[in-house]
Amino acid sequence: MASKRIRLAQRRKSAGYSQEKLAERLGVERSTVVRWETAESVPQPWMRPKLAAALKVTADELQTLLDDVTVIQARPSERMSYVLEHPASVDLVAVAHLHERIRQLDERYDKAPSTALIGPAGQVHSQVTLLRESAANPRVRKALFEVEAESATFMGQLVWDVSQRRDHGAPIAYLDQAVTAARQARDPCAEAYATLRKSFVALYGEKDPRRGLSLAAQAAEVAMQASPSLAGLSLLHVAEGYAMTGNLTSCEDALRRAEAQFDRVSVDDVAAEYYTVNEFSRLSGSCYLFLDLPDRAEPILRATARALAAKKKSQAIALGNLTLSLIRQRKLDEAADTLHRTIDAVELTRGGGGLNLAFAAGRELREWRHEPWVQDVNDRLLALMAAI
Image: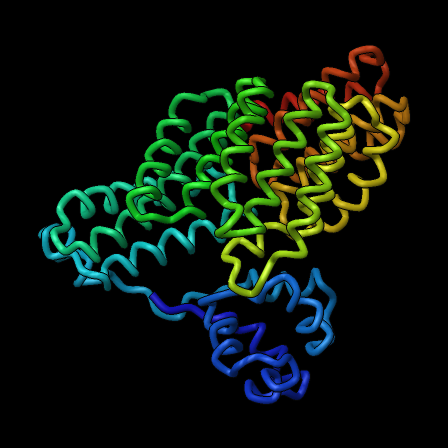
């Protein structure tokens, strides 16, 4: 399969740049620009403002250009068909194909419902597991463990989403598989990320902040030497665990430690694109909401929701928390408007986190349930549930 970001290349040309000239302006290799335009990679977060300025577009417009990937060649792979029929023949080329399929599905996560992704992701995960069990070559087997860690983590994420975060057993089983595979591959980043996602299940699904805090701390410890970004992200969830238990001092200490990780991030950090200022702000706002400080949470969440326009699942969570902060301050007109925006975002992606927060906000409006505007909200929530 081959693909291109055709509109990104068109925008570069309309801005008057060849690939070489754009690379020269940005201080990167021409091959880096080529990889961006062939959808093999995306610009790192710190590079995006410079790229947007060069192309004379806004940050949101740049994200739209990056999201617009066109498949220019797609045909069944005879090699993969043969490998799946003869699993012992698996080689590194087949492993690379499977890794690319997982990456493509993962890139769609923020814009597509998890129900649309779980089928193809499950198929790839089954193929990875089959081939890993049959691989004889040690290098190939190690590479398959790396892909298995990634695919099992993604499956845990999707299964939990599809269950609307009600089924905790199946996601944990996938995430345990991911941890085991990551350890076999000696991949601390993959191990830390799978452990971190286990903390999400404990924090938001099982409502067990102490276990969630412990798992997030484990993830931070594993990630500390391998990925400051992943360590910072894990520490944010340590802070959230403390917030859920009402421990303001420990929460803010964890937030400070998480923020300090930004100074350690390098160009080689594989998780750099996931640990952003927006993610830090979103979790900080969530912490203050759990600490029953909605007035401190509101401005953080308001700014974060605006910044996450291109990531609808994350934006829905920020909007849901913003709605709760407004309700708890009895800013009801603003709360109603924000809750409608939350539902708009959830309707696009069916993200479990945003959906649960929308219903949590609906429950907190019971005091005003006879008001027409609350009845309108409830009608939308019922329609949303009926559509799931």
